[in-house]
Amino acid sequence: MIKDITIGQYYAGKSPLHRMDARMKLLLTLVFMVVIFLSQNFFSLGLVALATVVLCILSGVPARMQLRSLRPILFLVIFTSLLHLFSNIGEDARVLVSANLWGWEPAISLQGVNNAIFTAVRIICLIATSSLLTYTTTPSMLTTGLEKLLWPLRKLRVPVGAFTMIMTLALRFVPTLIEETDRIMNAQKSRGANLETGSLLQRMKAFVPVLVPLFVSAFRRAADLSDAMESRCYVVEGKRTTLKQLRFRARDFAAAAAMLVIIGGVVTLNIFFVRVM
Image (cartoon, rainbow, N blue to C red; front, side, top):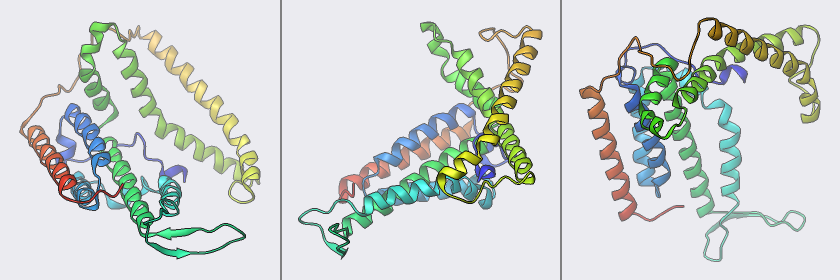
């Protein structure tokens, strides 16, 4: 499960998404997340799902790697879907299955099934598109793009440089901490620790010998990094140049135009078809 966490991982490639400007990818990802929640029926959500599949294909990232990003949220998808499955039992609801369990009368309606499927597809599209952002953009370019987008906030004395630096370090050290966690867990298992069986409370207690050395290692890495930055006279808000300059190209404007088409399609389908949620 630890290895399935893909936050901050970059997959090297030369796909159209890899070659896009980081600023445009950030903006379009945020807009697409809003569009996912704007979809109100299966037709508009189907358009969003189709766009998500096309993006996954264009990214050039292996399907196995993309599916790994969905495994950590599988429990969330199932739990949320079950909540919707047993809800929305109104007077006019079409009940499909009902039962009587010791005074509790659970029932599954057609509306509940629709809401469960609708919510699951929404979450999957959301995680898949957000994962593509880190898969196709290096942490340094992602930070540079974010700093360029937030540059006007410097006029309001917002510490944009500090914020982007924190984000860079967080993305950079997530894979490192995941590898460190996996190494510590293997070391504890070799000493006879049982981390995968037992009750929830027992498994939480078993993870204490993993968390303590992990926190010690994280603080040690942070102290070493701080000393290295100070020895190089690093200034957070200093004026710096970048090795790779960001420039909007034709493919970026084509992606923006495609996003406008998707937004128009979702709005149109929301108007002409019945709302699900």
